[in-house]
Amino acid sequence: PNAGATQTLNVITGAGCAWTPRTTASWLTFDSTAGTGSVAFSLTLARNETNQARRATVFIGGQSIEVE
Image (cartoon, rainbow, N blue to C red; front, side, top):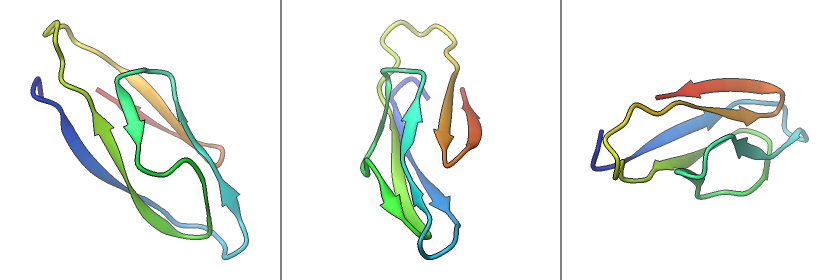
């Protein structure tokens, strides 16, 4: 949404598996910079000031998610 939003991401992995989220867009931020094992954390989409369509990729532990 144009107003921005926060979504919960669930990382499910082995107990000792470390992961770090990263993204291709500056308008996406995470409330966790890294973790080990399974956990839920938040992905925040900043307000869309330009009202233009936007798309980004989030990478976590070798997996990717497309965000629009």
